[in-house]
Amino acid sequence: MNPRARVLARRRERLVQRSARLRRQAEVEVLGLQRTFNWIDRIQDAWHWLRANPLAVAGGVGALALWRPRRALGLGLRAWSLWRLARRAMALRAAFMPPR
Image (cartoon, rainbow, N blue to C red; front, top):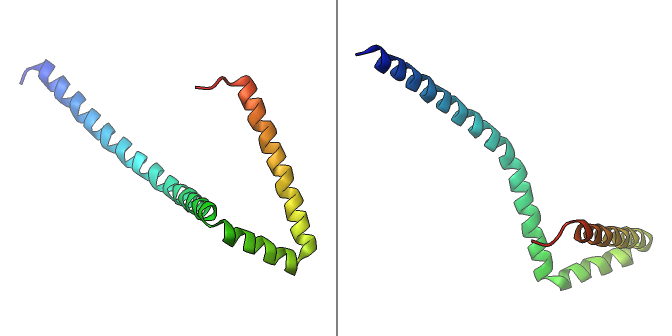
């Protein structure tokens, strides 16, 4: 084997080893993110269920209002405040970021 071929073979071997190391590292990082993605999926599934079952949501809110009226009022005020904050944030985003 000529010297150039040996150099190329050694370089190829180092690249193959580096590629394997990077694959293992990526696998570890993806496994770490998997738990987060599972939670995001569960939240998304719950959101879809809530949107599909508005009577269940209304029943829960009504039960909370009967059981703990003060707490229900506090939660309602917080939800309304968050809604207003989200609307302002969306307006700011629309003002500074053109639509795609």
